[in-house]
Length: 391
Ligand SMILES: Cc1cc2nc3c(=O)[nH]c(=O)nc-3n(C[C@H](O)[C@H](O)[C@H](O)COP(=O)(O)OP(=O)(O)OC[C@H]3O[C@@H](n4cnc5c(N)ncnc54)[C@H](O)[C@@H]3O)c2cc1C
Image (cartoon, rainbow, N blue to C red; front, side, top):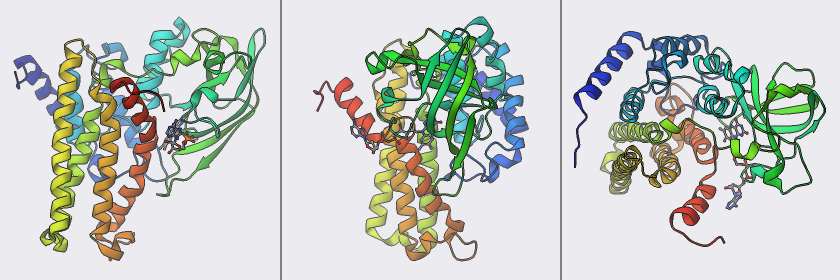
């Protein structure tokens, strides 16, 4: 078993660390580890736009991409090192992930030559994208979506509603999943359209999280005309395209979740010491269990990565998103509980750390829902990994 990186990988790490030391914006240091990813009202602040463009120009935005797409053609191991270093420092690459993480890989794989031209601006953050999948009656059961696009010779006419559309209020473009054939089994009648968010007939109504941030919105479509050339892939073949995300980063995506979990456990130890809760045997046991859990998750992540790097599938990774989001939730809940009634107070004088723990607790629910709820992840693990029958 080898537990060390090669010399060229350590050189890659050193170059990255130098870049981060010299360029990381000061705003990054003031962000909360329990944050919901946005900065309050300003969901994509100016400093984060500049930072994303700077990362792109220096080849550090998506390192596995070629230089013209903001990368440096790095290897999978170097991608893991990159994800580890930025997660360890709590440095966000971007405050709006759909463009670089979901839209770009889909357009590169399925888009026309014209559509592929949209990719550099999506990765650099010059264009903000949103993803219109979920609807009031189609979330976990995404294939049940009903937003309708009637097909005409040179255009689609879209009517319907999306919900929980992150960044809709600041996005210029949307990857919109629509029903183009209602008369076939539900997975077979879905198509993917690129929609300009300033097209007449689109209404955006922001929705507030329990934390107060308004990062997502309801989006209504009333006879919205979308040019035919904005269809991505083939007509009625949109279901296949719902799985797009950075394949070369998938094996390392757990790193951020584990790093945030570890950071919150260290902060919890500090909090418990300050409040004298570190002498309570129940609290001590819970903190120790959280620490042990985080260490096991890190080991499991590396094990899965090793399989991936050798070309095998890594079923461990289906488990990581669910496990890290639920473990984080437990840590924030404990941090809130050990403060007693002041735990619920957002107040710089009386609330410990100005409500950071209760905010982190509320925010943690997003991680257990977005991108597939924990219950759905459990169904997937039961059927695809453990081979159990459908219930
Ligand atoms: C922070 C955040 C950002 C989001 N951003 C976007 C976005 O940008 N674009 C977008 O399209 N969507 C977005 N979503 C929506 C997200 O994808 C959905 O919330 C998610 O898929 C769940 O769908 P739902 O909310 O309709 O819940 P439902 O599917 O109605 O589920 C309700 C409950 O029933 C459970 N359940 C449902 N089906 C089953 C089953 N078969 N077995 C067991 N339990 C089940 C679920 O686990 C859940 O607890 C976002 C969500 C969050 C929290």
